[in-house]
Image 1 (spheres, rainbow, N blue to C red):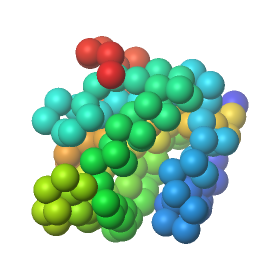
Image 2: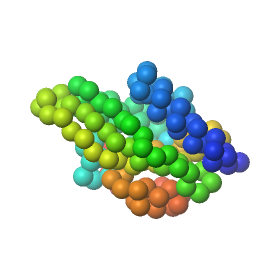
Image 3: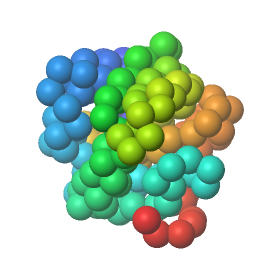
Length: 143
């Protein structure tokens, strides 16, 4: 049974707030044990990761690179019955370089029974919407 889109949007908003307050571990209880995590080529830490351990490995590698990192959701919207995308402004300071970086990323979540079954990052909204509307598993190199 699909979760109502409004419920999924609220879960995403709450997850961003909790992340800002408490860090990435707050997302773990929301993940389906077989969650699919995808970050496309051209983005640091790109690849396809599976399961909660894959998510943990992906986030650990990402946050090892940053002294500071913030995500500011600009727009959160439902796509179809089960997906939510969020256009976000990200800011960080590289750990080894000390260089400040800012970029826009689009996060895509797909929900089933109140759990995240797909968590993807994209460089633009159109890519995220296309992925949200295509329920087929991603193909690509394992991370």
